Amino acid sequence: MLNISGDTSICNGESTILSAASNSNNIVWNGNQNQNTIQVSPNVTTEYNVEAIGSNGCSNSETVTVLVHYASDTTVYLSSYGPLNMGGQIFNESGVYTLELNSSYGCDSVVTLNLNVFFNSIEEQLIDQIRITNPVQNGQLIIYSDDAEKIEILGINDLLGREIEYKIEESNNSKTILTFSLPSGIYMISVRKDNILINKPFVVSAP
Image (cartoon, rainbow, N blue to C red; front, side, top):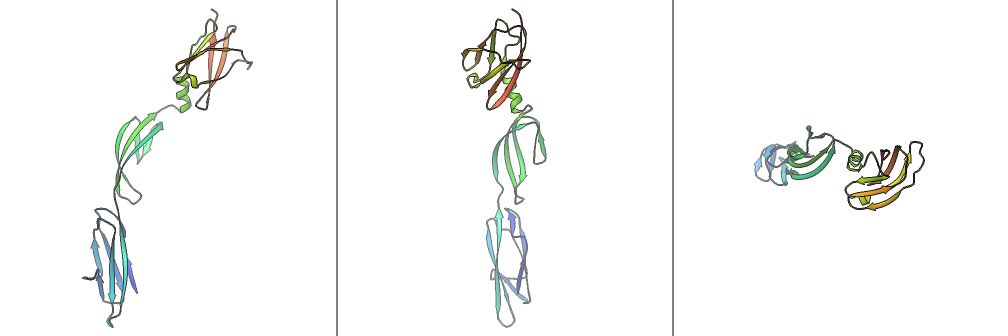
């Protein structure tokens, strides 16, 4: 009976001790190392053979494979809505960072992190990006936004929820112009962009 012990999964540059136990007093590693224990430092995955030879000349052999894992260099691109916790480090600002992390095998790996940190949700960002003239005068509401032609106008309502008739006079990449005839008061325009519903209040004031 031949029993082998030792760490058979290491990182490149590390060493491991392999031990063989048997009823035989004569144990040979790789055909020439006559000892129970050997220390090895392979830089590639390597097989080691151990043989136990009994006093009657009978032998029993086993093969053990030591797997060698390597550190990796990785570049990642992330966006975080608020501070990012990565590898136990907190990142509050956008930038390029170099991190030393352990891989799943415990080997040091270098990660280049390209990070964008936002402190508003996607919806909040869209709300900030879509601007309207407020207050509205002369019956003309202008919606300003990048890619304004992608904005879907869902409707205009007063505070009682009644729908207001309007007409789209102009729409291009930077703005959409709506016209209507409304008395002074507070109204709500509903739009959709990137599948996100946005409601913006506005005031109609007397000319």
